[in-house]
Image (cartoon, rainbow, N blue to C red; front, side):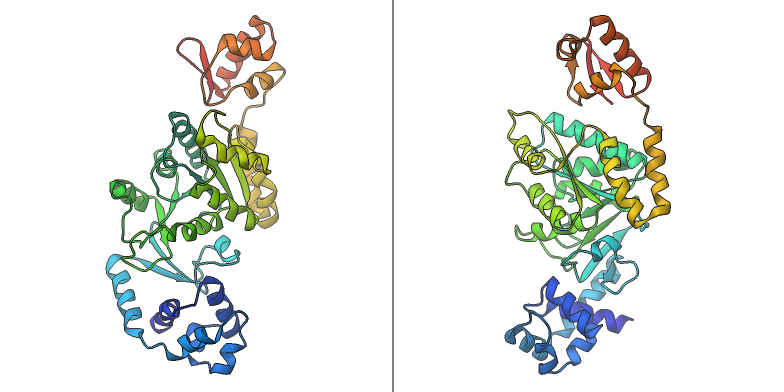
Length: 368
């Protein structure tokens, strides 16, 4: 087993062997050791391989570095997963270019309902509130929150999931033993207690800009869908959303202020067909058919959760749709709803009793 793992690491180190070509080599030869044993003619028969890459495989001799890599992981308590490993995340296996070698650290679980939540590093108070509420609510009902360990929305989503008593998965754009950003040391340790940290990069790899798109495709690949909360049009979160679309995952977007640059990305996603998120019910309704198709028995879980969300009757639903996580004053609600003040007051009280709306100071109301 150790010898085979050694060859997995070695093949990943061969110059020119990216994730797609690696996958094709394994499909053709079954194991990396068989790849290294193949002759030149057999290698050239692999789709997408070039003469130079075939030569790199045939002449590769830096096997000592693979041995050192395995020694580092053993010392640090890191598990290495390969494409043939039974513990390799099943959703990630289905994408076009799954990481051939995945480093894992933390508390392992099956995590049947992983959902990505990503967003800007420069989040507004509104974005922080949204990330906390949605990630926390999802975690409380058994959804595993997946994100990228970055500042801003990512870290907030991880923290909210843990505070809610749920699980979270962090995907790093550096080696699994490198904590970036450095101020997330405490969060790193907290995730290890009730979650998992993944990386596809060798031990000791420091973060580089071109590593993060690779990380982003793993975030979406690990997940049933991707929720984007605050993102500019050129942010990494938009890259994650694009990967999610290409991988056939559901994409969700939380609308924001039209005056904020951090809303331009999510509004573009909404215009492009992403599902609008007002609460977690919007997310669960979209995921239910997918869970039914892949895991019919486990669809009972989501159905049960939807049933637990209180039914809204009459004008309650109209008022609820007018509210968001941004406080709105009662006079504004009355004006926008065109309902009588007495009806608005009665319905808001009913919504408070059902636990879906909360009154703040100055007769401001928000969704819970």
